[in-house]
Image (cartoon, rainbow, N blue to C red):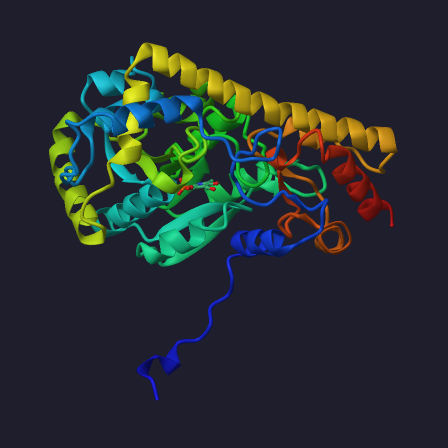
Length: 403
Ligand code: PLP
């Protein structure tokens, strides 16, 4: 017998399993609306031209070595990331009380940040929105947090934020709870708080002494504007909160598999930074020792060069505009077909995703009858839509809703 016989089969990860089923499906009209990755108007993955350009340049540079990066990463990269998040002219940067740690994409930022808060501040309770990105729970529990809690976020009926529920749940949170907040383009609902609502969230969090942990996986993707998408984080910093923020370059640079991310840390006093950096160094050292260089070099070079930066901003605009067009096209097509219900939420939602409001049974029907793959929550990746499949998808939605 094997000592490994004790190991039981774990459950599949929904989004990757659906992806596999999609790949194996031989139906000619199949549509993949599952993964959170950009697809162009032909349904293909897109390597951003500025990234290709940088990669060619890096490949030709004989001075680049494969020596280890420092444990906390490329400083040019972490500094540029903090500037992109907070705005280069942010007083917190000038005061030396904001810094970054290069991490393994957004997930790695959440993981390092959570372990740090648990180990050094002894925080054990965390709150995430209901619903949220499915990995938040696991990452925090694996980082040592023992008490997972949820705050209300989505009002199914109104297809809007359950703001009273949210405020009530935060008001009841114990002091020093870590509150996970989506910086923009909330996944999966696609609905963000308004500025006034963010102000009220900050009021409650200040009063209740809660700790903000921002997750910024879509900066630039929500509005097409990097500054506008960072509004909430900058507002909290302006209000005087100490906070951390996991920044991912998976979506806005299309660097999914390069695992490029930054954990931004803002504290109240620059004199605290050295100790924090030293302890974060030990956390990274014990987890993966030091980060990979390739993606961080690409991003740091683009963020640090005015011309390349402008090129990148155009790419983000292009991607976010295509998503907006597809939202409008899907809604228009459903209205044209006379599909019962209001479909305004599809165009009100922002970012990559739409929470369609389709039920689990309707979702199963779409998979079985139409080979259209989407999460059982009804979440679709809007850029899985394109001019060649949008009518097919709308007709299928119509059928699923009216059958
Ligand atoms: N946070 C949210 C809300 C996300 O949607 C994602 C990716 O889908 C991530 C974090 C982490 O992504 P990554 O680790 O690929 O940067």
